[in-house]
Picture 1: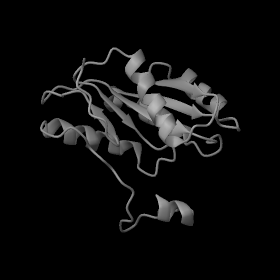
Picture 2: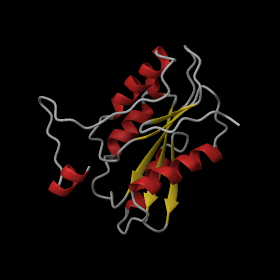
Picture 3: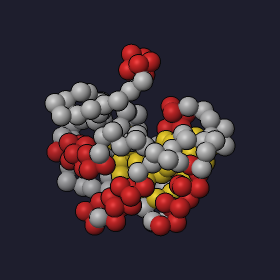
Picture 4: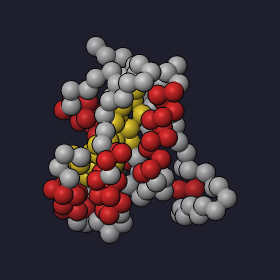
Length: 167
């Protein structure tokens, strides 16, 4: 059995320094039909420098047209974008868990692959994924990388009051 370390943004499979595999990014989605920035995901996946990054979008029982939007994305980049559909809403944590389990069970992962999750709202830009991968590659002694939304100069993070204080 492979050694897996669960973490906020990555599951690392004991990565030897200098070796780079595929990074599978799970994106939980609930009622994202009108908010999902499809153009950013399509642009990111078409850039050759992101060749080793794949997305698995998890539809978390959305009641709008999110599933159709995800199907359209997947049809445009079938080699880079896949979908896992949860017919009933289970919440973000369950969507991430099911998405990660789906990736782990359907891909022949190696010791140089990563599994991550990323928020659909792209409050953290997709281009940041590379900095997490780089951090893991240059520090083979660490097994996980975490990210957090923090108010930095020039950034405007909008949240409902309840999410701000409970999140």
